[in-house]
Amino acid sequence: MIILDLAKVFLPSILAFAVGILITPILTHYLYKYKMWKKKGGKVDMSGKDTPIFNKLHQENETKTPRMGGIVIWASAFITILGTWFLAHIIPNETIQKLDFLSRNQTWIPFSTLMLGALVGLINDLRDIRESEHGIAKGMSLKKRLLIVGAIGLLCSLWFYFKLDVMSIGLPGALVTFHLGWLFIPFFVLVVVGIYSGGIIDGIDGLAGGIFATIFAAYAGIAFYQQQIDLAAFCGLIVGGILAFLWFNIPPARFYMTETGTMGLTITLAVVAFMTDTLGGGYGILVLPIIAFPLIMTSLSNIIQVGSKKLRNGKKVFLVAPIHHHFEALGWPSYKVTMRFWIISIIFAIIGMILGLIG
Image (cartoon, rainbow, N blue to C red; front, side, top):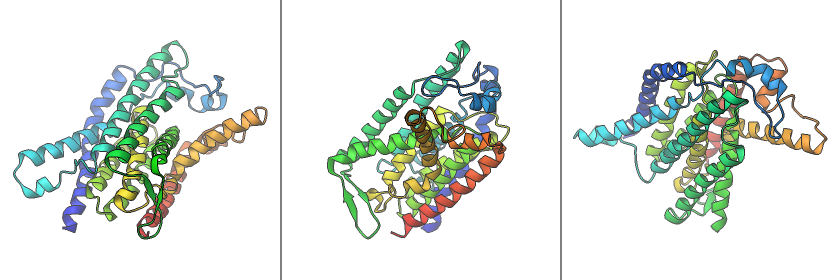
């Protein structure tokens, strides 16, 4: 039985990786043929001012490298999960049928958030590209994106609260939970929005891909331990899709992940964390800040920078935020920043997974 469970987890990952590798040349051809990159590089900060340090580091590459590479991740996941489901329903073989991991109780919600977030992110990326023809691209405003992400989080929270009867989060110790009652709903939304804010880590070739793959691999391990095999397989599926993306995103990147990748991944990560909490008899939420530490750290660096500039008459804590660009501004090569962030991500993912398994 354990062998079949392991196969059910690892096979989708391998298939998603293979599918991602196969579809990438088609996607790349389209992205380059239609010049799906910013026509004018650079960005502005939240106050609308130019960001000279960032623009010096990345402005040139932004006008040469296509966006929307995150399509590789969700498209390979979509093809694999539906392909597996289709085979399980047309081939009268018990083993193949057991490998189907599209289930209502474990994977429908995270799969839906992955695709919905990817679609909204894709719309934002297309607007970003189009608007760059007339100046610095903005896409959807941050406020609009936060409202959309919050709305998705609200829908999920209502499903958890009313349909799944979840109104508490797990704590270390047997059968120990912290009851939130109706406050579970705003707490759920807050977690979703908070993790989404960490999506700004997608700023250096290879950085976001390696970190997201590590995070979802850790939750795959936690879900497997909780005997949520379908959810573990889904997390493995995402890891496979991310690794296919990463194959082409390492320096020099063939494309960037952008919102169509980061929005779906961050929202789904938050959902997976709740799925591995009281529903799985664990505390996936408690270890989320540890496993996803690079995302939290990146988001906090932006908050600290903005707060410092407002409260200290324009004085900055970092040369440029988010923090990975600060290290670039200090003179670190981008590949060094990426590799060291990968190492940090792996260490914290291991720590978080261990804590998530020993409760």
